[in-house]
Image: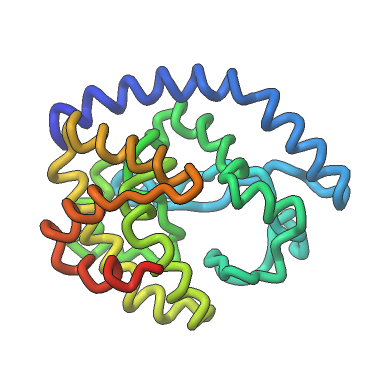
Length: 230
């Protein structure tokens, strides 16, 4: 892990704790709305792979219908565009990523960081793969460059095949290549580029062209997905 990442992880834990407190009222209101919608528990944890392959519970505001005894939705951890498991209020939360606000608690605990590779479900992680071993040397993030670069392409691939086979075979290698590149090149300058790209992305008509150019020229595996982005 680079010196910059080591420093930033400490800062992230502090910021994560502060932001978790500041956003608690928003999480509380959303939790009440979800509870009123179907009477089920509004907060859930989903298993994700963290540092060195350790499984942790990633917090979320539930956005799907409950149909299992443990209060979760059944089926794959992948979510397609028109997934029938998603509730109306869940769809609105997901469009603004509000369902991910409780992950600030994971950041405060050191299980996640603010910027980094998104955590993956255990079913799609191969701990014997050297690339996975490299990526898992750092905590996963709430947001990162990969979702900005190939997010739309990833969703289109999942929509084509909701079994998870194509995701494992086609999407995961591309995401891994970008994640490894990011961790190997993490710096103040790169993180500023990621943050500004995230801000542009949430604005109407906003794009992350500069980040796409940087990643596209450095990660050969990403060139096809970048060109196929809508």
